[in-house]
Length: 89
Image 1 (tube, rainbow, N blue to C red):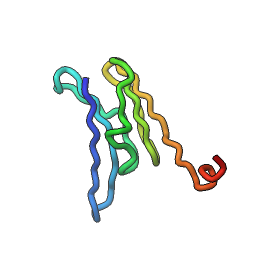
Image 2 (tube, rainbow, N blue to C red):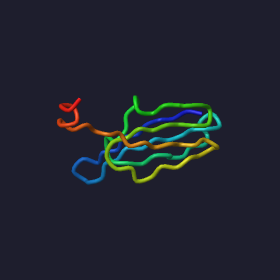
Image 3 (tube, rainbow, N blue to C red):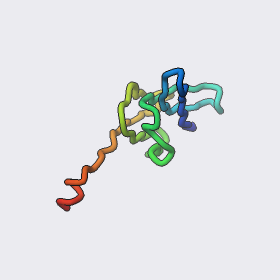
Image 4 (spheres, helix red, strand yellow):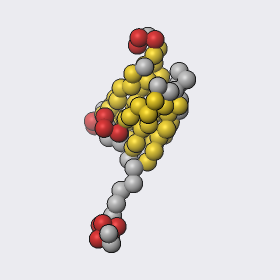
């Protein structure tokens, strides 16, 4: 199994998104398991928790989050701290 992040930006033509694709069978099978806003996920936010669980932390909007190939995909929104949250600590 392998996971890859794609970022698509059509610039002035409209449309921009980020996705995470899961690969199986030595790359012959693939499926998008996460689809969200452009820049919503980066490599540091995609972690294998086990052989059958992939965790994707994202910011922004997630339009799709699904498992594939007997892998459970958990999509977790990142919380963004406001200045008042930091100040109160």
